[in-house]
Image: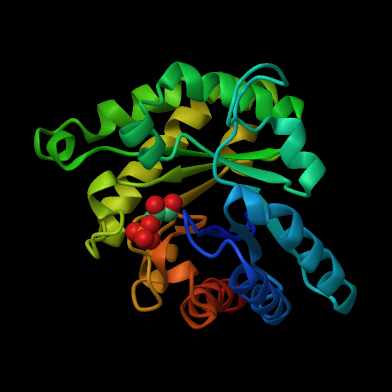
Length: 264
Ligand code: 13P
């Protein structure tokens, strides 16, 4: 972590917690936000829960604290005959201010390409949604020594857009595919190696982009490994899957970030 950047802890709920349980968890996330004021908190519920959760977070915000709401995906087009799709403006209308793009589960299961990620990042900026763009290698790619090549290729699809909109916030999530939902995690040194390489690519665009863009680590982040990962110089936060579904574990991860800021 670097004190110049506020740590960002985002919970990707994936296809969980669509109903009342999601609203209850959002209320607890607002408590977490109030208890950890040096950390920026975001939750990404399923589409159908975004409006209710954004409203819950806004109402609770009257008592202090802030928790942003993210979508987990969107269509890049603004409207039209695209059955089953959701536009950036619809998400903003529902109360989302963030959007996760290019998650490996979208790339793997729905064939999302670097070109589509490019289009979605551009559309997010137009709709004033803050993109959290995910990149990361598979186990096969890591084992064949391709990690940095793959990550840089994925990054090259959208890094110029981040530079073009350098005045607007954005984040990148490095999520090694082999660490997602497996309980295996990159060690802090392994994560830092990739995060530092990502920071270099940002630096080649501009010092400003490198200084302000938060690079999150994702992949089996839990209460017991969060602090060591977040302590790495270029790790500015976490994109948390499984451990974000319970307030106790998500809160512990936020506290780990808070304690690093407070002690720095
Ligand atoms: P897990 O934390 O469950 O491994 O999921 C990580 C992830 O995919 C977050 O987007």
